Image (cartoon, rainbow, N blue to C red; front, top):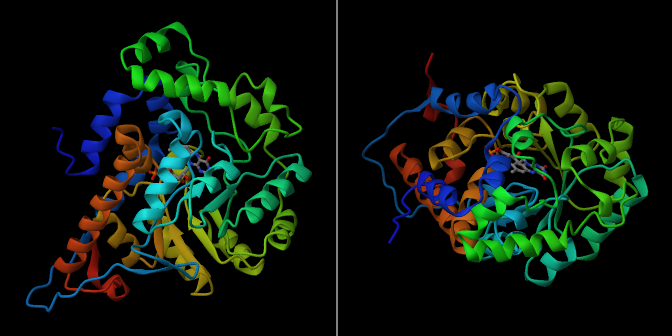
Length: 380
Ligand code: FNR
């Protein structure tokens, strides 16, 4: 039996079970992958102050994110093509998150549609929006999310164009995936996965059927994205999306104080400090190093969250100490899902919960709300 003790164990299992092309899509960063690396190393510059002789019972990580109760301040980040990493991946991930008590965010670029995920879940999930050149279609996406009861809209702003990820180019990453001979050979060794991949191929993208860019003709994900995503987006357009969506609006991909203030001004409920997991602007700073500037700029007016590089419970505490309300995890979700479907996502969440709670106790706290900047020191 494989022991899954830390997220790295799930990652190893993921490598054994998922075809290489899909691993490349998940793990690569853009260009030289400098930002991808900084997202990890900068977390390790934040060290804890250990405390002793404290009353550490009972302990809780429970809090709220945009006013919604959560068991810990962690949400599943929107990840495209989850249904490619595991059959019905979006549904399995949503079910795991729902049972665990954390939010699941369905990407615009999902295999399972908004409606399909809604049919297989009992609680509201969040919907992530990429703004398309086809504005009517974009509005219809928002209306579909509202119609199934999505409880927040995550508007991603850092992908007006797509960062070049060399692994995807080398692997001929297309979407829906074209099953070339090497891939088939890879898949043929794993019959369970072969079925899922073939089902995925036949289904295509659930949310973007009907978009003016003609998803039916899609041959290459990068080319399609370039043709479809809106490179002319301005704050005035975003105001319109605010008006069309009356629930909580979370704006993702914010890395500068001025942009964060613009989000406050237009009435967003939260921003996510994110460089898209190092997949977009290579050479950008790490999210964790930018977080304090954004927290200061926002001044408590709205929630500030963080993603990009969170891999342990210690990272969750580090982000909280620097003022984040919560974090999102992207690749850890994919590792769990690819390793063992719904059970793998649940295990990933359990590990993060255990690690976060233990770290909180070691620094002398019983409640996640007690964590402050006084609990950490920065290593030079
Ligand atoms: C993403 N991310 C992403 N973001 C988004 O808003 N919509 C999307 O469809 C996707 N798709 C996507 C696919 C894959 C394979 C990855 C790894 C990431 C970005 C994601 O939401 C999040 O910002 C990062 O994954 C966070 O970094 P970590 O946790 O992966 O280090």
